[in-house]
Length: 100
Image (cartoon, rainbow, N blue to C red; front, side, top):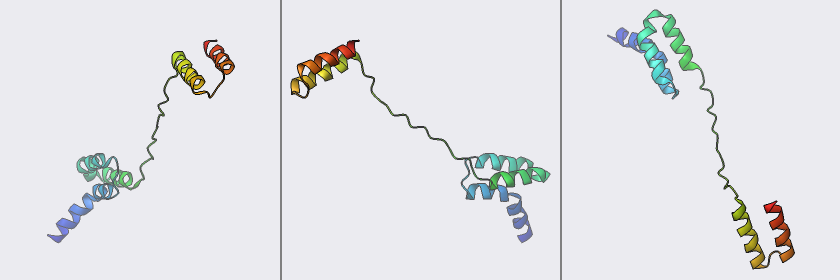
């Protein structure tokens, strides 16, 4: 009985290792181990696969920058002029630059 439990554990050692290491592809290792573990080569491949480290996942974070339209830039420029941050001449120069 104890020998049977030991053999069962040994057969599924690659799957146990994959679940223990929280591999991303642990279900694939289990499938390979279950169906091809008896071929010895399948068991060795599953064991090596479960022992390797997962490649790091690349995470891309896109920064959402609002698109500046001509009208929005003119409104912002006018607001600066109204607040007294820029002079009328600076407003006109900025307006020429925005409008081209």
